[in-house]
Figure 1 (spheres, rainbow, N blue to C red):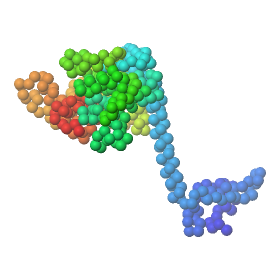
Figure 2: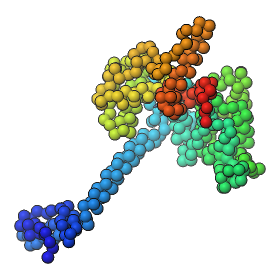
Figure 3: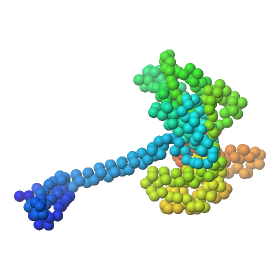
Figure 4: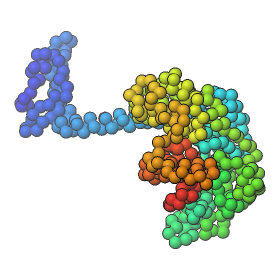
Length: 410
Ligand SMILES: Nc1ncnc2c1ncn2[C@@H]1O[C@H](COP(=O)(O)OP(=O)(O)OP(=O)(O)O)[C@@H](O)[C@H]1O
């Protein structure tokens, strides 16, 4: 006889009981009781132990919760990937200049020629590079990214060329493939190529001429075949005139040049861009999607966006964070967007700048920049990526400024 049984009640009521706790031999069990019918008549009931104890049920519950949130996460990821499937879709905008750019990408992507993507910082050069790769015949292989500005000079060679086993003390036993080798069969995206030191430019040129690399510590050259996509926000022609960029390298990297227009020249794209950023933000943080009031849209369209789309994205996401959902109103935008003022209110007063009369305007500007950058570095705990994003400047420019201020970059 099962103690505490309720099977007789189930026979009487004809109602199944699922997930009930029943005390048996001093332990709690999770049980189910189901009536047995013959035709319309109840002829008995069957009891089953579903879980050996409530803890087991709790554990299962936790597992289901964690699986549910995993599914949610992958759903969001899949959605993001679906949007990026064709590469071009991730470039939002239907202005004339962006439509022309997309048409050029479609035309150029299948041709296996090097492409130089020029444009101001934050204008979307990396997105263009991704789209070129994704709709090229090399899309099933990797696109390897190198940020020439962020490569410490001591690591340039091992990073780019790789090294063979035992090439130097501390080298990994099996050696290491460099970025050129990793890009074999795919594309190599050289970001901020204008910031590449002259000695590295010479090495890169050799690789492009020979189509092969020699690892550090090895005399054997390895054939490499990649499509080179470079990007810069610098004026390379001017750098060539100043002997800061090699003319022969320029010819190699620029059979096709694409120009990404600055945001201020395509203000009509702002509503679509902002909508996309708000949608992504809501998806990432599992929050309802906000929209922008007409006043906010017109304020955004009257700004000149020195940090381009990156700055817009940052601004829109910032407003979304501070909004309570629904429509984002103008008071949530930073002061700078209401006409005048710096993008960030400096934590440290910009002292001494106005006081000294013997400085030229550009020196005053430099000082203001230095202080704003130092403040942002402090506020964001030295996170250079976030500082560059917040100030709407490229990381290469930030590195240069930090080196000028005397901040240790390592
Ligand atoms: N047309 C666009 N549609 C959607 N998002 C965009 C667009 N252009 C830029 N972005 C977004 O703005 C940010 C900056 O873009 P990206 O990194 O491509 O700029 P960049 O020109 O390569 O900048 P940098 O010169 O600083 O490296 C990214 O978050 C990117 O997704």
